[in-house]
Image (cartoon, rainbow, N blue to C red):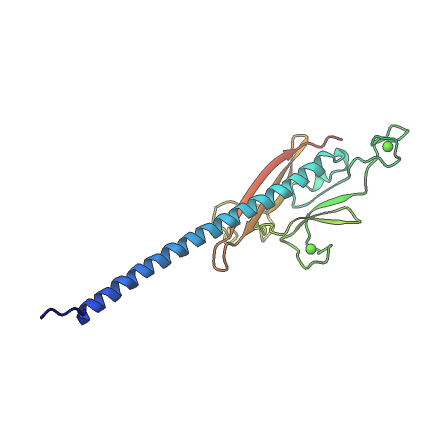
Length: 205
Ligand SMILES: [Ca+2]
Ligand SMILES: [Ca+2]
Ligand SMILES: [Ca+2]
Ligand SMILES: [Ca+2]
């Protein structure tokens, strides 16, 4: 007589096969979701860097060149004044022919937490003395921990053999080369995803 049930061996083989299939499905779905998390983080850091660079470029293009703290460059912050129409005659020049400018603005990390939100070295801001405008909250921390301008042992935290600084300004001809680097972790145990942007801006005034 034919036995329609399964033998113990068949049951065990079925369970093993089923377990393997489920493990594979789990691995595939985990790796798909981690790939999409890291793509999201990349898109996010790119947006952050682009938005910050857009504001910085606009600020520095309007800057009065002679008001820039050239002597302090290259460095992590820049100070400048912007041409503006103070007397309301329609141009940024007064009746005596002189350029009208704003008070000094500082652009860089919010190391002293000028806006009081608790974010400091990962936040880039423009401070015009009256208002602190946030450019990004995801600035890459400087790797130059001993502040000597070169990459030393133990400083290359993202292992790319480059000294990454997060935000950096240096003179380039009559302009300023701006570096912006943003970062984000796709997950709590993941490595940081970074975006680096460089742009040279020439002050018009
Ligand atoms: Ca004017
Ligand atoms: Ca802050
Ligand atoms: Ca160093
Ligand atoms: Ca590095």
